[in-house]
Image (cartoon, rainbow, N blue to C red; front, top):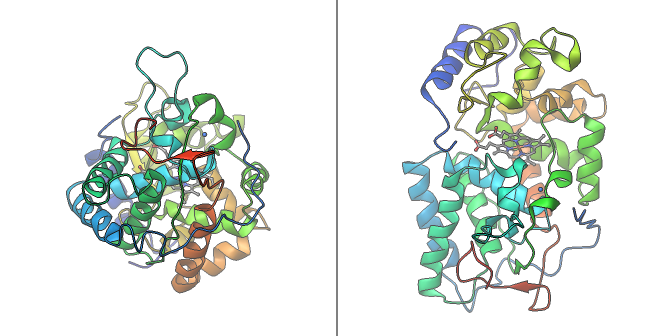
Length: 347
Ligand code: HEM
């Protein structure tokens, strides 16, 4: 389905949205600013060619099954990968569970990670278990996460790109390192850019990677401010289409709503990885203030317009940007890393 223009997206959009708002509820329910401007450390596409040649096939059997049985696993796993890479680098530190009785919470239990879906963790754990049976002690959880994220992009209709591998798992996972490394839904472009720059990512990477919001869902609390009291004005955000506003207000009251209610990022094709996200922004159909900001800022608007017109350009740029994001803070060797048997526990 093409990206809607503001006039063509009338009732069908809202009907679609409402169906999702009513039918889909959340099933459950990021500091060390790793300044990484150095080139990635020798990741390679054939890293496991000798020791675990079936790796991608094994992970693929799990991701394709999950895609059928629990489609929310797709967007959830891509978000999990993003939250992993932005805190301590792409080292599966997000998968570690807090030790029972420990006062020091692991990354996963930080406030900003509370809404990461259990289906994403389950996908990686299932894949790891199968991989361990065929190639014990060889493959890192961090690489499995990178491969699974790519699989889901492709399964949902997005590009297929090679995943470079060779990441080791990290030894550090601390909730206290999350808050300043994960962007918030009300961040301005300056705030988003500062954070992305601190990870070695550019303004273009920010626009392109935000395109992951072409699928998946967000909880009311992430955008309710836009619906009733935008930036303290006691008015809704003028940059939201009035029909979308109305539909969202019906599901997300200002006070006392159900905290499990979620809304799709992309009201036109919520389960498809396409470029509709950018067309939606131009039609004032962005869900988060941070999304809509991309079309309001003169630095990012031209790229939003280009990507909205050209799906192939988006797919190409997204593949490159995912490889870049996937190289943030990569660890190699026993001094800095480990290979875990279980992704949720240090080795
Ligand atoms: C640029 C700044 C970003 C901000 C402010 C942001 C914020 C958010 C928020 C608030 C949610 C909703 C969480 C919830 O309520 O459950 C979300 C979901 C999501 N984010 Fe982002 N995000 C950003 C960038 C990214 C990037 C770079 C990626 C991946 C490359 C990504 C992938 C996703 C996906 C796929 C979801 C849907 C998850 C699901 O349905 O379970 N986001 N994001």
